[in-house]
Structures are given as C-alpha cells and as structure tokens.
Length: 137
Image (cartoon, rainbow, N blue to C red):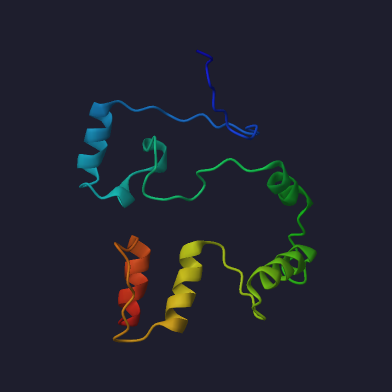
C-alpha cells in the first residue's frame, strides 16, 4: 500500500523558538494568576488558544509587502493600495483602517448597535461581548 503524505502547500520563512513549560509549572502559573489568562506572561504560554492573532506563517508576498510598504504617516501609497483593494472587494466608498479586529469591532458596534438590539451568536468572544454590552445591545 503506497504511503500518502499530506504536506503544507507553503514553505515556512521564519521560525521563532518558544519556551516549553512543564505541567507543574503551568499549574503553578495558573494558580499565581488566579486562573485569569490575561495575567499570564506571553512567554509562559506554549500554545495560545485565547487569540487567533499571529498564529499563521506569512506568505512571501506578505513579507515583501512589509519590506516595500510606505510607512508615511499620511498619504502613503500603501494606504492607497489598501483602500482600493477594500473598495473593490466590498464596494464601500469609505474605508477606515484599524490596527486590529477588536478595534474595528468597537467602531462597528458603536456605529451599528443601540440599546435593546440583539446580537446573535453561539458565544461571543470576550471583546465582542464587552462591545455589545457597552452599547446596551
């Protein structure tokens, strides 16, 4: 019977060493943090299931974009390219870049939700719930 190997359809361009902890150390760290995951130091977390931020390898095009990006504070060609791409995909006239999904979510919820609105979900992510409750929805 031939061996069927499934490989990732990409090459990893960067690796970062991580610190392995023992079960005993993890249990101690959790107790010391009163079981509040936000009080743990990132270096003490081997696998972060609290967030999906930064969990994937970047493509060669993404790395190139960083190297070629125009980081001017205003009027950058990088923003113009970003804005045109978003407008092409969504058809929206206005584009407001944010540094992170939770920041975008806060703007969205404050714009779209009001007291008494219902925002259905199986279970909200912690910031989603906070943004919903803050608006009174």
